[in-house]
Length: 506
Image 1 (cartoon, rainbow, N blue to C red):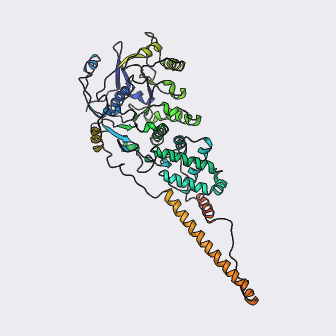
Image 2: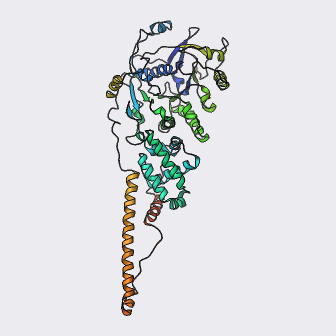
Image 3: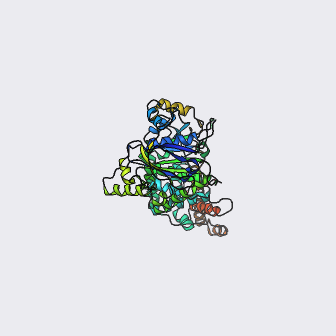
C-alpha cells in the first residue's frame, strides 16, 4: 500500500493551481454551502471519498438519496476530459460503504436508548416548552435515582404515568410536577411515534466503534445514513445527528491535532439544527464543536447559506467551500454579503460578484494552510468523483448491506427488562398490598361488629385486643416513598449525563 497523501485534492483554481485540504488541518471543521443544484452533494461525495482513501472513517447523511452512489464505481469516460484538464486520472472505484437507516429499511437499523438521548435532546425532538422540559427532566431524575432503565418509548410512557400518579409524593422530593405537562408530553410522544420515531429507540444501541472502522486495504469506512424518510421529521433528524456528535465528544479521548482526523462528520441540511433552537442548546452546540476537534473529529456543515449557521459556530469553521448563491431578496443579499466577508480577500476578483457568477461544479475555496491560517479565496473547478454520480440501485444497496461488516449485529431488536416491566411489577405489588390491607380491614371491621353484638362480659374480654391501624396513605404512595428513600442510599445513584444531557459512558 502506498503512503497516504498529505492533502485532499478538491479541484483546480481558474488560474490552474491545485486546491487542497490538508488532512492535518481537517479537524478544524468546515462548511460546504450553496444554493440547490449547484453541486454541494457532489462536493460532499468527493470529500467523503477523499478522506476514506486516506484511511479516515466518515459519517454523512444522504438527504436526497443520490449520495448512495459513492458505494459504486464511477463512469471514468463521462468525466475523463474534465479530469484530464486538472492533471487527474480517474480510477473509477467505489468507497467501502456501510448503509444505515433509522427505520431499518435502506440500511442497518440505528438505535439509541431513551436514557442515552437524555432529556435535553428528547425535549428538542418533542418540541416541548420550558415547563414541559422541566417535567421531563424530573422524570429522568426519578428514573436515574431509582435505577429504571429507559430503553424505548413504552418505558418513558410508563415512567411518566408513574410520575403523574405519584406527583404529590415525588414533588416533595424533587420538584413540582404538573399533570397538564405530563399529558402534553404523552401527546408529543404519540406524535413522535406516529412519525416513526419509535423505531429509533431501543436496543441493541449503536456502538461508535462500528462506525469508525477501516477496511482491509486501509481505507476508512464511509457510513451513509439514509435520510430520505427521516427528513419528514426534521427535529428528529437534527436531534439524532446532534446526539451522535455529542456521543463522539463524550466517548473519544483527547489527542490534540493529529496528522489526519480520527473521523469526519458531515452534517447535511445544517439549518435544521439551528432553526428555532433555544439559546441554551446553541451554547452547548458551540461548546461541542469547539472542543471536539481536540478529539480528532472534523465536523463539516452542509447548508444552502452560511448565514444559516450562528456566527459563534461559523467562526470555528476554518475550511470553506462556497458554491453559487442567488440574491434576489434583501435577506438573500444580506446572506450573500455575509458569505463573501467570511473569506480572505483575493484582489483578482470581487468575492460577492464571483459567488453569484459560479457555475454548477464550481466553488470558491479557502482552506487552512500549514500554519492554520486561511488561504486566499480561489475560484475553483471542483474535481469529478471516482465513484458514481447518482444513486445506487436497490439491488446494489441490498448487496452492500448483505456483505456489511456489521450484518446481523443490529438487525434484530432486543427487549430486555426495563422501566415498563419494573413499574408494572410495582403496580402489581401495590395492588396486592392494597388487597391484603382491604382484606385485613374487612376482617377487623367484622370482628369489631361481632364484639359489639356480643354480651358485656365477652366485650370486656375482647377489649384488650388491638384494633387495626388505619392510614390515609395509599399502598402505592407508601411504595413510592420507600423507593425514593432507597434512592438516597449507596445502593442506587444518579447516572452521569454529558454536556447535551445524554448518558455518559463510564
